[in-house]
Image (cartoon, rainbow, N blue to C red; front, side):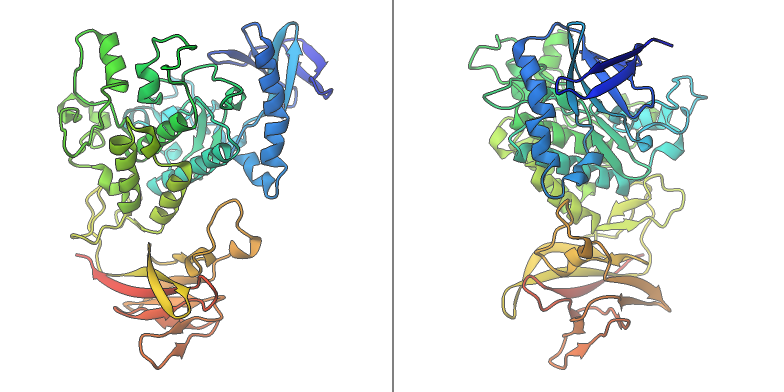
Length: 501
């Protein structure tokens, strides 16, 4: 065990750490405090003035702009944000909170822990490919598809907050995001490299697989060349889209079978740069993934005919088109983090639990355009299922569709954000809006909505309005209209009953 070093941060806070490198990245070495409540990360390269100034701003002004605002505590679980800058023996660095317990592997690898991952941090790379999941991870670490949707929501929300503050992560990738698929948690790390446009340029161009095509294509140019593209908010948007695609489909959206050049280095630069092409492009199949080239552990995910991106549902599919077709080479057309967050929240409302207890994914987006079945294991849905189509009033008595549906399943909850379109489940959600107001149950072959807290709930299918008191219940029927709230933004539900196998 190394010696105990005691010193102070640049703003005068006393710190201590054990002089023993516990982890190393591409640019810095990490040391633990004695109680493991925080770490000290020191950059190996000699710092310049701009690097020091950047770290002081990141740990000071920019940190305060996120955490000192109303609701700032929400972000403490989503970022591992540096708390102070340090300078020790000519080396510059930061202090940062120790990762939460949920972001360390509880179990060893699938093959008797020959990788020695037990106790290591849960880098997203372990979960973003079918090969890693199937070959190496203990099944108890993998989580389910619904939790990957939740992980996507959290990452999108965290990136949205950075961008709202005018900051770019610059190296958003599965190496700089910790995930916990068992509980649906996520945490963005390596925030000490934040880019502030016009003030602090990026230190790195990013991590392969997540670098935007325009950055790859111009990486040979000097940094001073105005034609060279560097990491910024627009490139974060590309990386975020890739992350979400990989966490839901366990394959890369640009790595297909197409060969651009016989020289591997040139081919790689073209593949991820100027000639990047979506593997599921509807009008150009030249970069499709060949299932015959895939390892058994990568199937069926690398067979895009069996598991196309459309299995993610209408909202996410539309954004994947914008990200990898429209916006791949036109940066202004890329989806924003806010758009991903909204689409993911709405997609969570479309999922159904799979009837197959052995289904690895457990959940799927219900598709009633054809015989509904789980796209991952093929198990058909059986019986009747209510779909609630949500409408809201823009003016008194005039309801318009919200392009938002809620799928029903036993013990599915109804929340205030389903009841009123002016409420959205994010970091600003008021405490009184976090509790469910109703739930659904299948009893004796009929579906019921049990009213727990809706004072205005009424069946308004006919002119003879029937109130449903708090504590009461109403049976769901095809074509039925339920008024959930009379407040501004209050919603009306149109019930649609669909039949499974």
